[in-house]
Length: 433
Image (cartoon, rainbow, N blue to C red):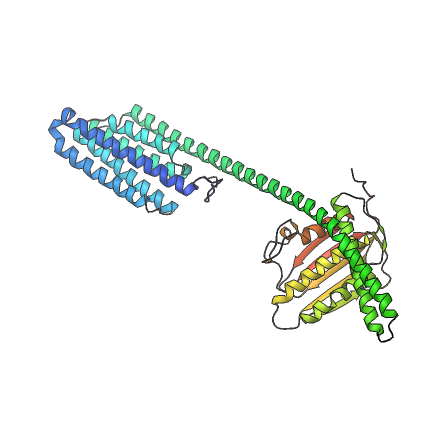
C-alpha cells in the first residue's frame, strides 16, 4: 500500500510534518502514563490482593513511556520517532495483557487496546503502513488477554477486535490522504501568493521604468545636442583631427540610440503599438558586435560572426531586436568571465530555416546552465548572477513572442546556445487597449 507523500518542511509558518508526528506521539505516550496512574490510584480498592504486582507492573510501564518522552524531546528523525512509538506501544500492550492475567479480567485489556488503535489512527499522522503494525500489536495483546484469562478463544470478541483494527487502518489511510491533499493545497496557495507578489513587483517595476524613461530622455537629448555643438566647433578648428570628430559623432549616435531604446521601452510599458519594418538581421548583428567589441577585447573573448548571405529581411521593430541581441550577447560575455583554459569564444550565427523563418543563434563557451534551468532562466527575477535582477532574458522572451517567434536555450557539457526564431510573416499587430 503506497502512502501519500507529506511535506517534511514547515508549510505557511506552521510546524513541519515531522514535528507534528513527534508532538502527537508524545501526546499518546502522556495519555498512557496518565491512564496507568489513574488505574494505579484505583487498585488499592479494586485489586487489593495483587496490589504489589500491579504497582510493580505500572511503575515499569510508566518508566518506559517516560523514557520514550525523553527521547522524543531530543527531536529524533521520523523513523526513530516511529520506532520509539512502536516500542512504547508494544510494551504498554504487553503490560495490559499481564495486568489482565494478574486480575483475571478478560475485558478491560481488549477494550483499551482497541481504543489505543483508534486513538493512534486518528491522532498520529503516520499513515496506514505503521498503523497496521500498531493494530496488529494491539490485536495480539487483546486476543492474548482473552485467551489466557478465559482459557479459550471467544469468537465474538476476536471478530470485534479484528473489525476495529481494520477500521483503525482505514481511518489512518484516509487521514493520511486528507493531510497530503491539504498540504498540496497549501503549497499551491503559497505558489499562487508568490506569483501574485511577483506580478505586483513586475507592475511596480514597470511604473518605475516608465518614469525613469521619461526622466532619462531629456539628458540623453542634451548629450546629443552638446556633441553636435562640439562637432561644429571642432570642424572650425584646424588642429582637430578627423578621428576626434569621429569620436564625437559616435557619442552623438550612442546618445540618440539610447534615447530611442528608452523611448521604445516607455512605449512598450505603455502598451504602444510596435513599429515593424523590414530589418536586416545581419546588419543588426554587425552593429551589436561593434558595440561589444571593446568589452570582448578587454576580456579576451573571440567574437565569431557566421552570417548567411542573402538572408531575407525580417519584419520587426529594429530597436527591440537590437536590444534582444545585446541581452543575449552580454549574457554570453558574462558567462565566460569564469572560463578557464582555452580562449573563450562567442559565436553569433544567422541562417534561413524553411519555409519562412530566420534563425539567430548566440553560442558561448562558458560553463553552461545549471541542471534543469533551461526553462526557468526566462522567468522574471530568476538569475544565477550574484548581482543580477533576473529580467534580461524575461524581457528578451517577451520581445521575441511579440514578434511571433520563439526563444529557447540549450546547454551542453561546455557552453550555452540561445536560439531565436523569427517568422517572415509575423502575426498582425494588436493595437493597445
